[in-house]
Length: 443
Image 1 (tube, rainbow, N blue to C red):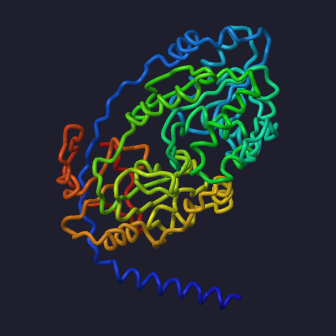
Image 2: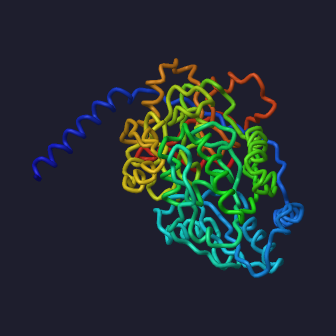
Image 3: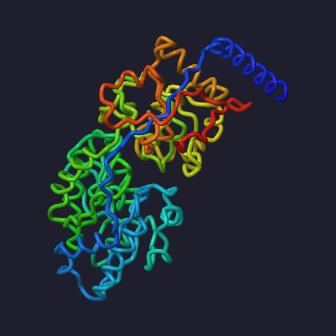
């Protein structure tokens, strides 16, 4: 056993030595720090805007004194989430109702009640910060089934409550394109359906979401008259709260579809459509449900989604600590570092992707011993002329205001109205372990 292990180590060392010989002479180009200027139209008084939106809606007339209201909150890192949730809770309290938080996040948090409370806590949503109880369990009620036989579920605690209200951001989904993508409709059907609801909705694959989610929404609203609707949030290109609106249940599908069009118009993007090499410092579930947003990278793990730039080689260097080893999203990458591979919790990663059925998101890319070798391999295999390579490096797909671009990439831009060069070009710096300097984004 010991001899076999030793031979394996030797074989790996020999293989890495050969790879190093193939790419060691690949010169890494200098990069230029640039800033993308996105419009800032954020809301300054979040609590006031929430109160105004709730007052303007007609849901106040549907409330019953002393009745319980299940307020669904998801697992996404929405800007100002604690303030948004607390403001909703306070508004219901003033009207002498009894709101409580129920996690509406499908199978996230390890598909356990305690795990989902922990996810909320990490987002700043706790009983102390919000001012009401959080009730979290995985039990569901089967409300009905669709004509195609898919069961429709709702969290048992929410089903029992007199009223249900949701809070979520409206945005483009990472895995499919439709009239309703990521928002209140998805939260009602998949998030509030817990693990069973998520499994049911994913059973036919993401390419069916565009029809399944609205059908499940109509079913739930018909069977549970106490569904009030939800607080819809739209964020701008800088991930700031740009719009807050209450959508009542009777207009949920249509109004959310309109807000999705608006949300897509605010989305940031990379300044080039054709990129030889894209380097991303980190991916993670706190960055995107798909680890890295395919709407930014153009690398889609599902045939039901399209759009974004054409990227010849995509190198990913690491996982965010918040991901806790969940490497969902590494599949669309071409090359990753050994350090990133070693940080992967495959049980956690596979549990996530089995529910979603998108196995392409967790296919293992080429693994190189160091980050420097990963970048060199990306350069060599892009087949672009070394002196004219169009390369971009970014921290993550949420952070597009600060980019590093090669001279050739910058010269490719035809519109510089929203781009500002922040300094002279410089070489990437690596430590003795071949890890690239991460402390370069404060320019």
